[in-house]
Length: 259
Length: 246
Image (spheres, helix red, strand yellow):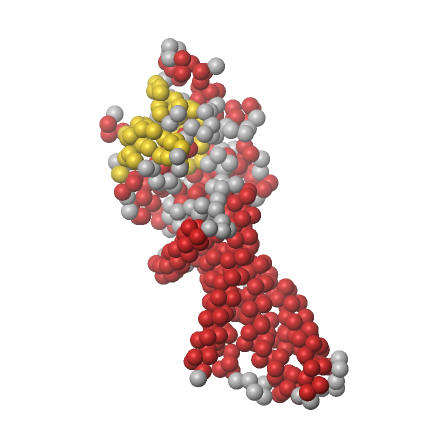
């Protein structure tokens, strides 16, 4: 099955891709339990997708916490509700902003990388070479990458949340004499660990679909160097769209289940 | 002769959209034989080979390899057939995230009959194969450090890892200078003698065809228009065939 042309804005291509991604997902699940797990490649992918994204997520997270605090503080101060600032920032970052923003960054960095890499392997016949030597390129290339993104994104988001929290403290500290202990106690005063579950489950789905979509776009990319660029581009665009769709569904589900 | 048949392709058809690339091709390969498929670029030589190892699905026709219908074979059966076939891709198709050693180790580590070997035994096979293709000095180099000819030789060494009974060479001399082309042609002959393999060599290089073929077929407009030994075909009166020898 070869994609006709990634990012073609026609209805036929859209449904072709939806069906392709669904088939790809079932194939991943089947492969995960049926075939030998490529442990070394999985660890290598965890390193590439997770560890090598730490700096990007870390810097963004600190800036996110800092900027949110600097912008919201005067508004809350005007309402006499400055004491609520740590709690408000923490809840908004952990439940919504952190997962979505970090997932979008992850899609841009890791998704495009996976799309381009697999597409390039397709163009240079490396995937064909694996197939004709009776090895399983899907198992080696796709299962490891999707598993790595599924596991690493929640860890990165947790790491980013903590740094955003720290960034927020720095932002507030610049304007007041608040101690870290007080900031911490206010941030967690109305926050329960159960609040983290929907966000964590959401990020697992974000990571999974970033991996699946990027792998699909690369694995079935068009031939030639143009195909590589299109696969990378399509991986980011489609993943970003799916992140918002999953977020929308997750918010509705959380709302229904909470009440 | 019948029992020695490795490949039997019958009435093969393949189109891409409106363009018919293969139009009723019949092809046979026998044990120990070097068969050259000669044809201009874009005439579907590679398509036939990709159908033989089922990287592509033909529109019609049958393909038997080692007596098994490849197009009806299940995954395990297909993989068993593929382990008996070596495939040298046009650009070598080396895995660029692995060194030459790792490239050779990759298929071996994932196939049942070699998986049980110790790393030392496996390294010995890798070194022997690289010595056969004259590339032992490049064992720890990366594909990006190799020239075009070296990549092809490394790709050939990798395809020998599973001790294939036949090898498919996809344009082995394309893009190489005359000196390196000669070296690759010599290597194809050497590999046949050393490893007792049959081979299908697809090429548009008449010099390569002359040097390496026991028998050759000429592909034109999706059909085989001539079949025989090089010298017989060169002396053929058919104008269409003569064009390939000019």
